[in-house]
Length: 389
Image (cartoon, rainbow, N blue to C red):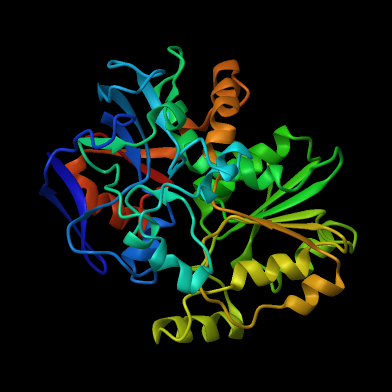
């Protein structure tokens, strides 16, 4: 089959690779009908996350049609149209039973690669370095899905593919970030980033009762999507002297009740801190540019909630004293997709939220490298390209 593979830092190639096979009787093989890049993919493409190997098939946000099932699969059959969360859960460990699916104890066979840095291990994830399990990714004609009964969710017939696809990761992640904020009626929520995850966090915060949602970005088309699609107020951080001061002014001097970081380790920004981060990151002295995270910490009101969705590695100059003295509650995780996907598909089916506008460009798998380049550099108004193998 054909697949989009990591060849080296900033070098993606479409090549022929072996077809996936049933390995465990609880597996299925899926024909991928639609898959999309995620901003977190850029971190290993740019060389900031280690343990990629030449020829690795990338991609972790996808949906498709079941074509083969293992003999112990009970809830999924050939021909079913399903969407699959990016993190793989076993369904039986304590973390899965507690709905903390990205912390699964049993689906990452390469725990020894994570433990020296994290002190423990996450679940496995498709196409996202060998430290996260080394599973083949979804930017391919076919993909193996382990523990299919726990990881495949039937897509209602009335939904178009673009309406269901983003429940796999972007929508589930954004929704989780808003859920972490324990939003009450009348709350103000600020979201750093108006890409796929940030826009879904903004939509979700509004669905959960936030009175005001403020999206922060610099690209006109993304800020426009935040206003027109999510109904958010917006800040172009390049057009103000201080995002923190602007948010204080917008909230009567208090700051937002909750702040969501939907950006992560490759945040863009302005000023001396951003230049410092960029220099240290380029020299591999640390992995992260912490502009968005630091702003969120400083902007959040006393006693407020900080929800961190962006992927981070090793960051210095972290203002822990601000967190402690302001009494902030910090909540963060990789997404618990299996917990949220059924609810998201119901929202889509009932017309409460249609995420299909995220899919700004459709491309073939063979056009994958060019699609990633467009996505990375945010060209031609691209929010998310979707690949159709």
